[in-house]
Structures are given as structure tokens and as C-alpha cells.
Image 1 (cartoon, helix red, strand yellow):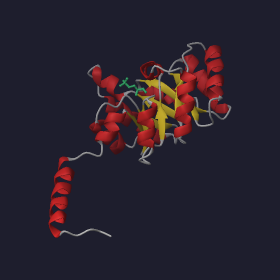
Image 2 (cartoon, helix red, strand yellow; image 1 turned 45 degrees about the vertical axis):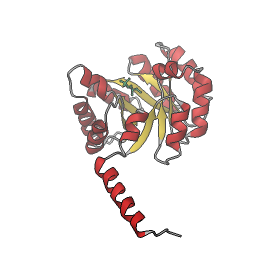
Image 3 (spheres, rainbow, N blue to C red; image 1 turned 120 degrees about the vertical axis):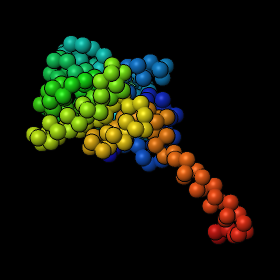
Amino acid sequence: MKFFVDTADVSEIRALSETGLLDGVTTNPSLIMKSGRPILEVTKEICEIVDGPVSAEVTAVGFKEMMREADILSKIADNIAIKVPLTMDGLKACKALTSDGRMVNVTLCFSANQALLAAKAGATFISPFIGRLDDTGLDGMELISEIRTIYDNYDFETQILAASIRSVNHVKQAALIGADVATVPPAVLRALVKHPLTDKGLEAFLADWAKTGQKIA
Ligand code: G3P
């Protein structure tokens, strides 16, 4: 499973990238707003840190304007994945951009049929929003599972990018189902490494080691 980080915070991205565990980055208009920085400037900086796909989202709702914005975003770096919303215009833009060799992430997916359309439009990534479905009382993970089955039925190459992840359990469930990618907020990504028994075990090893008076040298 690939790990993308869901943020436009450059210092977080740099720190996580240094761990070697990061395969890409996803941003959206809300995350750009949170960063407080101009989209082109901050996205360029992210692309310089991370070699993998960096999703940058168009903000237009009409096809023509989406294509114009996509053209500007594409010029930032070769590893830009254009993010388009799951609308008819977004799917049309997806088809045009992927036919042109661009990576496209179709976002705001809340149903299996929407994911089927995105795959037919040649999407590189489909982003089903787990947490936001859970928020409405539905089961976001069920959607990941349905999409996995549909994509496998037809050998679609579109990668399932589990998004709107809120917990370490979301990551585990998405991995068990076979999502190709999880885009994870920095705090959740860091929480994946934590286990109280690891901390306790390490503490005991270090205490015993100190008693030996030895050094590895
Ligand atoms: O990148 C989009 C998605 O991950 C947003 O998550 O927590 O705002 O629903 P959230």
C-alpha cells in the first residue's frame, strides 16, 4: 500500500519525506487555505520535496475552465496529478487529461457507481471519502470494498486512493480491503508507528542494557 500525506504543510511533508515512507501528497482547496500560501508557490515547493504524485485540485466547475486551470497546474512539475471533482465536467476533463498523458485524481467520490465512471474516464486515482461517509452514519469502508470488487471484476487500472482518513483503524481496514493508496493526515501517519508495548519493551531493553555497562563500538 502506498502512503500519501494529506496536507499542504511543507514542514510536515519534509519531515515525513525524510522517513522514506512517503509515496506522494494530496492537497485540496481547504488544505491550501490552511497553509495560508499561494497555491502555485506551495505546490511547487511540495513537488521539490516529494518525487511521487502530488495532487493539485482545480477549482473551476466547468470543463473549459477546468482544462485551463489544469494546464497551469500541470506546468508546476512533472509529478503533478490533476485533481478534478466527480461531476460530468470533471469526468470529461479526466478523460481529456489522461488521454494527454497526465495523472488525474478524481475526488469527492461517495458511491461505487461514481467510482465506476471515474475508471471508465481513465482516472489514475479515485478518491473515495471514508470519514465524510462515516460522518453521515454510513460505512465509508464498505464503499472501498465495493470499489475494489468492481475494479477487480473489470481489471480497471485506476488506483483506489482511500481519502478522508481519520484514524489508524481506517488505514488498517483500507489495507485489509486492498486499497492501493491511503492519503493520511500527518498526525494519523505518525500514530501508525505507535504501540504501548513497543514503548514498554524498548524501555525495558534500554534499562537492562544500561546495567551491562556495554557500548556497541
Ligand atoms: O483530500 C481530501 C480528503 O482527504 C479530505 O478529508 O478529513 O476533510 O474529510 P476530510
